[in-house]
Length: 434
Image (cartoon, rainbow, N blue to C red):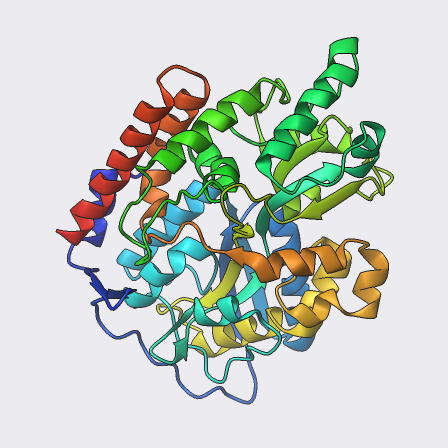
């Protein structure tokens, strides 16, 4: 694993951060320009991306591309989240030609653009994207990646259970706590394997990006200031959010802080063990699959509940981009365009469980006939906002999450947990700024 010191060395002399007029700018070399697209494409493309359900999605997209360009051979290299991030940093810093196309997470994009690691896309089709997904990968009028996997982090609930305890969908986090208490009293305490709340809140990166933002932001806290880089976690709102989470934990799934994998949490949801919870789209992909789910037709989704404010949902969109060091730039750029098109997204949504990013997929008749929650997910993606905006989030998230986890378990106070997590964010950010 790459240490923080190694990571900062890797980036040393490559990226400098300046905060101007409320925006974040990176002072680096200008990214390479791409040549004109030829009439025919051939050769090979190697795509670096994620494992798990992401791989299922990308392989479906690869097949769509292959049907259009059969003379281009494709190879996919799946990685876990941290492994992919580190592989990108090391290979791009060394100008490696190993990878032609990159399937990348939202918080990595600005670092990659401004280090010259991505090719600009000529005449990108940005139609039917939410405005935030058009602007995020665009710098100085050039677009360097196109959104594909419309992940968002949101609240879900079992409508049948809420009906059974006389509750409506939660509008506030106080509502969630009240519901969780009722579920414990009516179900958990009498031996039913059903719990009031659930989340993937294991130690490290997971609690930091998969759970805590859902409570932190509605409570009025935040990870970063308006410039997207300066740490802003240290606040009474953040302490209050963590204290609330500690209380909610008493009524939560007993494995919430101990799940061995995302699959284990997803399976608990499919078994009907969670009344209300926080999840990303992919974790609920099979809720209406009768061969895998015991909660078919019972789960609903919505943006985060409000508390002091309404935040919406956390975006976690994945993008396709072409490496600046590819030896087949024409095919790489075309791969980005084809695989993020409406046609490719619709097919992957129907066949591989893709959470789409183009709004016209959500309203497509075929998609709506297969996904009863299409309108709800469209509302969520329209309300989703980036949380992990610092380009070095990947280098701080593990330690930030470790302190949050210790605070949640009561190993240290909520105040100490927030302060130490904030200090970790400052340490990483200050090292780069200096």
